[in-house]
Amino acid sequence: MKQIEKTGASWAGRPCFRYEEVDSTNEEAKRLARQGAGHGTLVWAECQTAGKGRRGRTWHSPAGANLYMSLLLRQDLPVEDASMVTLVAALAVQEGLRQVCGLETSIKWPNDLVADGKKLCGILTELIFVEDEERADAQSIEASGVNRPCLVVGIGINLLQKEFPEELADRATSVALAGGRAADQEVLIGEIMNAFETYYECFRAEGDLSGLKDLYEIKLINRNRQVCVLDPKGSYEGTALGIDERGNLLVRTGDGSVKTVGSGEVSVRGLYSYV
Ligand code: BTN
Image (cartoon, rainbow, N blue to C red; front, side, top):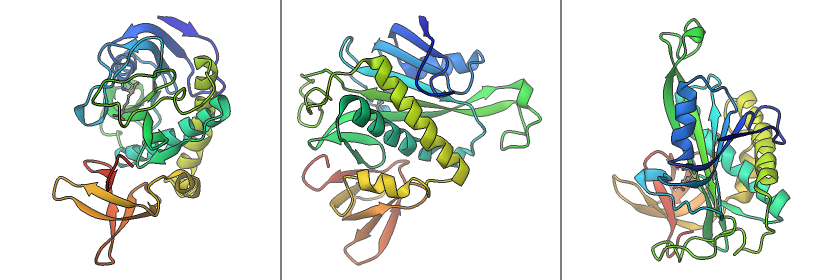
């Protein structure tokens, strides 16, 4: 493990620990959190042996091609607000890729980045509770005990990869395949952290996504498109209208009513394809 001195931001990505190989940067960030690592700590790995995706899936993490990193957030944050941080992170990655790779991407709700209708970045945000005796008297949601919620925001970006496992081939792409410039990973991380800081501070100041909603909706590829909402209680179709200030997707269904879709257990697909 090597400590990198600088990212472009003032707290996000500081310190930054770089590993040649790790099971999962999210797992390593959690281990560091339990050892007392602070708000803004970043774990960055060349490859992952057990990269994790959403809904228990595996995140394909070969060496030498892609970016795998996890940001630790230890500020007091109501647990029910955690899902909004994922949308903040999607905006930050979108901005980093635009600035450093010259690549315009869209966001597939809630947090996949897509180019040419295929996914090139996934984000996995995990909430853990970490003992913190110093803060046991804090006037916040965790004031009753010594366990404070921490968020680990894991970001995987396909940069140079040109071939994907068969099961992913029709819906995965990379910055290289989408025509973006090759990036120095350190520079890209710096820009993403910089943007994350700006967007996260706006989110914290408002207490929700109301200050970022317009920007997010410009990037939202699902907007005004037909979507299939894969709800475990029963799938349905409708037109995605945008998001509300908490990041829920608003979907107009056939009877004209508007449903509010939370990202928890629900995912969204295009009617005939991934978007
Ligand atoms: C998804 O399924 O879309 C989320 C994928 C998240 C992958 C990243 S790679 C870095 C971090 N470490 C992990 O194990 N997962 C996330």
